[in-house]
Image (cartoon, helix red, strand yellow):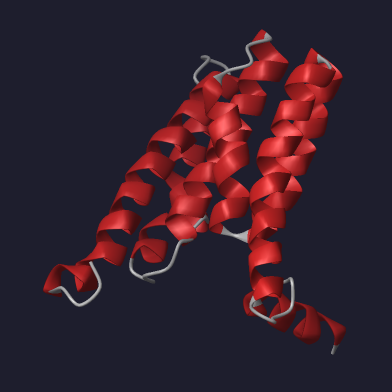
Length: 167
């Protein structure tokens, strides 16, 4: 859509979709995590209302970057892990989160790899290996692409954070 007037609105549209997905995944995570039970319902209600505020879900929508989509991918991993650890269900949502989390933000690789190791531990090498590959291959491919352009293998946003952390 480059050069089209509609291109200006695409970041907002993507972020609204990310916000909707993140809100749904947050609610499902709380419900399936046990906060819908009578004894935990008061805490669940506070978390349901407070979580989006503390995660700044609404504010992220207007930044125009990939943050709400990354939040949705992260929550997909969290919900997928809740389902795996509580119900023994290894579903597609967990694998989708593992794939997209590092694609959207390289920092998502940490949670994606942790989830892959948990899958390996709970489900074996075949499922765990698939999860680790889904998390690693996009990150490695992107680093190879950056290197082919003569750039550092890490995105400049990550390098800036590393420099500021060293100060």
